[in-house]
Amino acid sequence: MSDDTITAAAAALRSGEPAAILLGGPATHAPALRAVARVAAATGARLLCETFPARLERGAGLPAVERLGYLPESARAQLRGLRHLVLLGARPPVSFFAYPDAPGLLAPRDCHVHSLAAPRDDAVDALAHLAALLPQATATTAAQARPERPTGELTGETVAAAVGALLPEGAIVVDESNTSGLWLPAATAGAPPHDWLTLTGGAIGQGLPLAVGAAIACPDRPVVALEADGSAMYTLQALWTMAREGLDVTTVVYANRSYSVLEMEYDRLVPAPHGPSSRQARRDLLDLSRPGLDFAAIARGMGVPASRATTAGDFTAQLAKALAEPGPHLIEARVPPLFGPQRVS
Image (cartoon, rainbow, N blue to C red; front, side, top):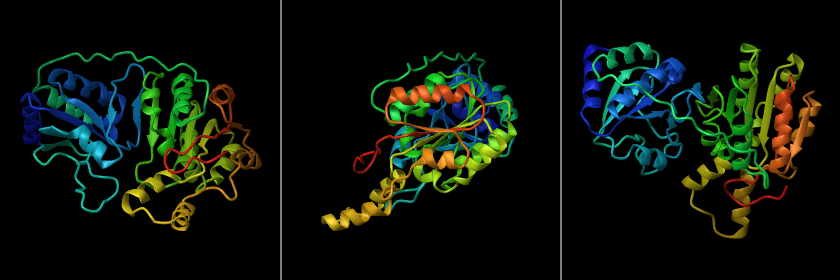
């Protein structure tokens, strides 16, 4: 972080041209978020953060930050028209996977990228130096309503509404929900202050052991692990650790009986097969049936109290009960897959 870099970033933000600040690393923690919100208020810059922040502090009273889209076309749409992108604790954004004939860099070609602070730099200090070169402004944080407790069909959307309605203050949310969790950011924006931990490197199965680590590190805070069923199969032994150590972890398994995110990526990379036998063979690669998985029984077998929900009302009641009781719990949420054929529970 040099004086020239700070001066260039300040000039870019004062230029009046479309600009955004991309946050990563410690810049997604509360002190930096409050400081960068004042910079955004003074300049009109948009606030974005990495697709998978290691730890994002969020909720009521904290500035809302838009996460960069997972699919490259979504991220490019978010960045379209920008003339300046200021990196604060983040690297230049690239696509999560490489796709044939598609550029990996996501910022527009004519966008000037300014690296204000590297991931290991002091983001708050960098912001203080930047703010000294900008007009002073006070950031306001608009209160967002929490969703109502959902009823009706159990889907990824109604699970998100239940989590948003019930998430307790100070919770640590470990998110490896993948495709079923697309609705979670919006549904939990108005929840009390909490930390959101994500799958930063694409290593499937991080969620359950990460929840164990969070619960051991912060025994006075509730941990909510939002886990896809395919990902859960990689590290199920973490449930036994939760039981053995009496950790206050509520695990929600999105049981859609498919590696849906891999199914989606497969479809994006490989041409669709011809003929019913070819389609069935392709489907079998990423299917989680024959036999079906009984996560409630697996959890109980490891000493974790467990239940299964098939409606939004059931899930909401089970989640409220699990959050109110100390120690580990697991809820198997039978939701439909977002991609591929709909499976019967």
